[in-house]
Length: 212
Image 1 (tube, rainbow, N blue to C red):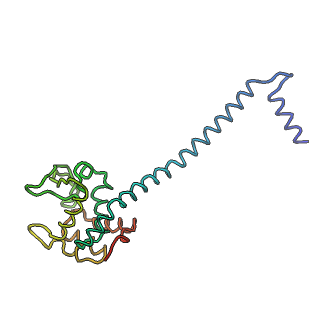
Image 2 (image 1 turned 90 degrees about the vertical axis):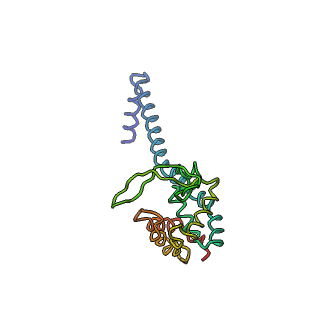
Image 3 (image 1 turned 120 degrees about the vertical axis):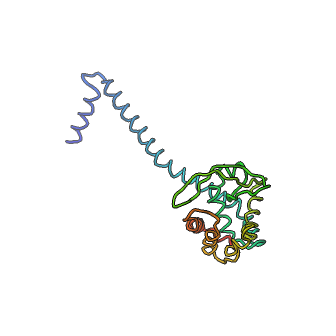
């Protein structure tokens, strides 16, 4: 009985005195279409962040895959853990997207000395317990491979004033000791530099590239 009454109500809504109520029909069509568009929009926005995350992950994996073989080769030749080289390249070049890396093939933020090809760029340094922006001269390389080679040689040979500056990095057999050695040697002014390097290595399992 209830079903019959509901059916009659629906019929009266669309047909009155034998005439089709076009306005009511149009209203229902609009509501149905609007609901469909709303559902599609929700589905699109729900999936969009996932797609963006997947794109970022693919980009990151591609960058690691690109430089990992070179990092492993340099580990064999110079003793620098591949995970350290990769993590530093990621951190210093922002996954190969920074101006210094895209324009000048400098993946490690290596500063230039007199007589070396250089480019002056603004950079942030941590001084007197605060971040400041300064202009500094950075090395210019003809390829990212040259940048990786120079980075390995810098860690092995140290600097003019202190050839043993990064000795602990070279001698390290685990990435945590090497990361702390970078900070002890003054590679970066960021007080959390070692923590960031270690976190990068553990997040992306970069230690699997190490041979030591």
